[in-house]
Length: 448
Image (cartoon, rainbow, N blue to C red; front, side, top):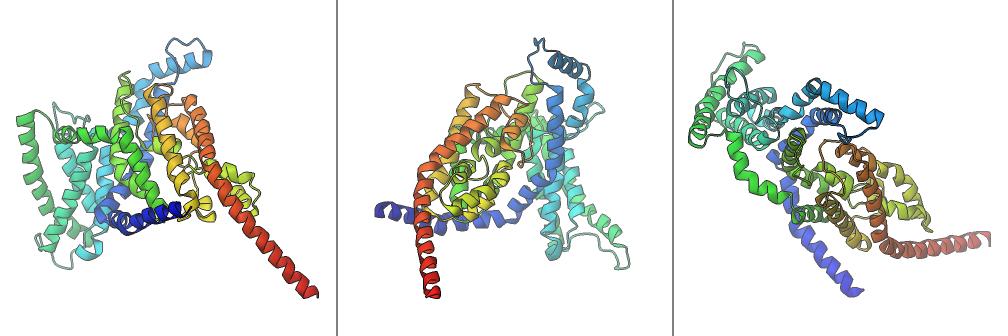
C-alpha cells in the first residue's frame, strides 16, 4: 500500500510541477483562447447544419420496403437540393464563421492595449480569407475550400490579420483623423491600411501558389497538415489526448476544455471529410471527432463517471448514496461536477486509476467498434449536453447501434470503478461509524 501511495505521490508531483503549469499557460494564451472561443461561437451554425444533413441522407438501406423509411428516402431524394441548402450555408462554409469568430475574439484581447475594434478585425479577416480561399472563377465563388478544408487557413488568416492590425496600431501606422470625426468613420478609415497590407501580402502569395502548384492556399496548407490530421485520428493519439486531459482534471484543472480546444480544428476537419464522403456515397474515413469524445469516451462527463454514479446509487454509505442521487440526472446530460467535487475525485488517490482507465478503455472499445464497422461513424455536430445514448445515435446519423454501445460502455465503466468504489465506501463507512459513535457518546454525556 505504501508503494502504491509513493507512486501516486510521484505521479501527482510530476503533474502538479510540470504538466499543470504548462497546461495553465497554454489555456490562458490569448491565441489559444481566441481559437477556442471562435469555434464555440460558430457551433450553433454547425449544429443546425449537421442536423439537416441527416434528413438529406436517411439512415435506411436504399432497398428497404418499410413504408416510413421508403417515404423518407423518396422525399429526401426528390428534395435533396432544398434540404441541403441550409447545410451548405452553415456546415458547408463553416470556415467563414470560424475565421470571423476567431478574429473577433482575438481582437477583444487588444481593445484596451491597442484600441482595436473586434468587429473590424472580423471584417478584415473575412475579406482576407475569401481572397485566398474563394477567388472568383468563371463568374462564381468556389466553395470547395470554405468547409472543413479551410479550417487551418481560417485560423492562420484570422491570427495574421489581427496581429498585423495590432502591429500597425502599435507603430502608429495609419490614417489619422481629427477627434471630431465620429468613431465609426474613424474605424472605417483605420481599416484602409490593413486592407491594403492584406492585398499586397496574401494575394500575391495566393497567386504564386496557384501558378506553381495548381492549388489554392487552403489546399496547400491541408497538404502540409495532412500527416498531422491522419496522426490525430489514430488510436495512440486518442489515448494520449484522453490521458493528458484526465491527468489535468485530476490535478484540479479542467483538462477537457484544454484538450478539446486544441483538438477542435482536427475534429472539424475530420467531420467535414466525413460529410463530404457521405454526400458522395463513399466510406466515412475518420473516427476521432468531438461527438466520439463526448458520447463514447467520457460518458456522463470526464472520467466516464456515469459508471461511478451507478455504483453510488446502491452504496451503503449515506454520503455516496446522496451524491449518486444528486448526480444521476446531471450525469445523464454529461454534467459531472456534482460527482467530481462531491466525492471528491480530484486529488483522491483511491480513484486515480479508474478515473484514467475507464475513459481509455471506452476509447479502445468504441474505436474498435467503428474500425470493424460494428457501428457507423460521426457525421453530425451534436450539443454536448445531449443524453449520451441519444447523442451518440444522433451524431452517427441515428444509428441506434451506437446507443446500445453507449449503454455497454457505461456498464464497463461501472465494472472498472466498482472495486475502487468499494475501497472508498469502506473508508467512509468506518468514518461514518466513528462519527455516529462519537455523536452517541456526546448525547449520553449531555443526558448524564
